[in-house]
View 1 (cartoon, helix red, strand yellow):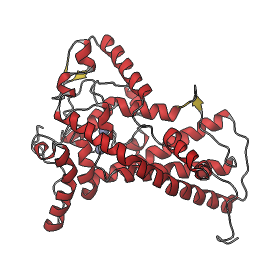
View 2: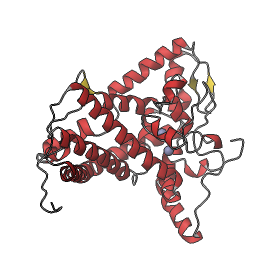
View 3: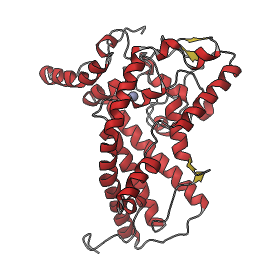
Length: 349
Ligand SMILES: [Zn+2]
Ligand SMILES: [Zn+2]
């Protein structure tokens, strides 16, 4: 059979959605994409933080200097020094810009890359194994589909994130995320506007691949497993995304950290201390970091000062500085014909 005469008969979830734009937009925003700032995820974050406050008798909340200190409940949840910090204000502006541009990347990439990858995956499987076995969909399969999608997404996220840290051209862009001197749930969206298409393209690739494989096996009928009508992936991602950029330390037991990224492990990712650089790159699981040797499980209350470090922070503090920084660095690279050193920091941080 030649490649040209194979027309996939099966439509995966993304291609199917493309038949109706309404449905696509709904699919894109409600189901397929890691959710935007979700109130249920935030509520869960604050509820767990209140529990942690009582369990740890006021310990476990960090100040703007990254040090853990004991405080009262309100300052534990919303420390003034964090929420009035210039970095938290820049988070808001970058979030607003991201909100403005997000539909552009998301709709265009999920409408093209997603169904494209899905169709290629289905065609390849049809060529290799013949027509779809059209297996009946059962709950265990739905759970497996959810887990497979999560692992695909996490792997693509890891690869993009790893590249951003290791390739100077991309580090200049991703540095904006790391120039955050304090962490707030909005820091999650703190990225340069040119990074949006990379993350959206990665998500479309992962969902397209997973949708193609399972669309083929189940003749396009597969849907994610849900709990109380909420995709467990969406909830996990929403919660994890919000809490890992919250200043309260939430550590998991060490054995669980071998499998899942605890919020405290992302505090490490934002630390400017050399031993913490380029660690804990994945979004949800610890599997990929373990495989690629970038896993770092911190001790409880380990000191993780956030930002770029005392020597380079001043150059990247305001909204304008952050937005222009990559262009300046790229010009510098072009003229010097070499990459600037990754981070400038004194050895003792
Ligand atoms: Zn990073
Ligand atoms: Zn982060």
